[in-house]
Image (cartoon, rainbow, N blue to C red; front, side, top):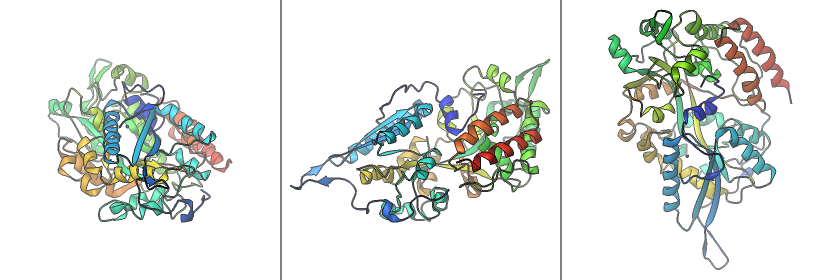
Length: 457
């Protein structure tokens, strides 16, 4: 877990025990392209088709998702079973899954062979498919999708990042994810200290981390904090947002990286100092040793860790009491990241309506069950705030969700975004966290390399 690449590759490491070495049935988890509604077939009643004699024909739909670990995958299996049972004689889903590091290659091979999947799970790489004019504009379907476009029932404003042409949606969201501060209640209780809450600043978190770091001679036996997702660009950027800045000028087709701004340098310095100056967080080698292959927070060796909300399901079996709080504020402001999970659809699919029906069903009919499953955070306001969602969740869950009122999407949409992340962000930040590079020098390197890649075609 030392080599944090991006959100999904992190999930791959969290998903200990998830075996999916080959595609297997999962019976349950810029310059704009075309902008007119002509991209999609006219929306009609979704479900079955009829032959010339009027007999109903079963539509078989092929999809792809990636493994998120045993708990979430098992809930996905149940979901697919529920959908197929509720759409018998009309639609039959065959949803396959792969490890994340094989996922996009498989999708690209399917496109190259002119046999694309009928739908697949979204991540930022799919923006490249939009740029190649491969994705369906789903607006015509959404016109008949029930409450999904009702802003009193769904967070419609959060859909905006998926309007890649500025007007139309190219994916159907179904869940939300965000970032929170996890903490070990047993450690806080033993020290007789107050738990983190929504009033905390990063100064408060640092002060607590200093008190909760335990040493025996020169050896640290308990860390006050692990930098967690602050080591990844999208987690680190929350410290910039809270200072009214950002790493680049805009999410969709950025034209300039501005890592050398004072706020961005300060963000890097704060995290670097947690490890090397304040010595309340482990470096990579110490984290690996203390984590013992299960993760340092999971091992009970650290008091706090900022991470994604998707860890809730995996943390449910931890052998100690834990909870969560909103990310601390930077002085007086908090801006958290959010992401939407959902589905995209190739234009070339011959069963687009049936594939969309699964996405619609997942975002509407299935939302109450998603709340009960506790794996993803439902998109529907009612399901997200329901007793079923809140029951059994950490006491700080609701307060952490409330922070979505001031959230920015934690993504970067550009044809070279993955190259920027993998070749510029990740190795440069790794050098900063290992104290081999100053924040000032890191910022200069990132600006030079990333801005050059923005111009590369």
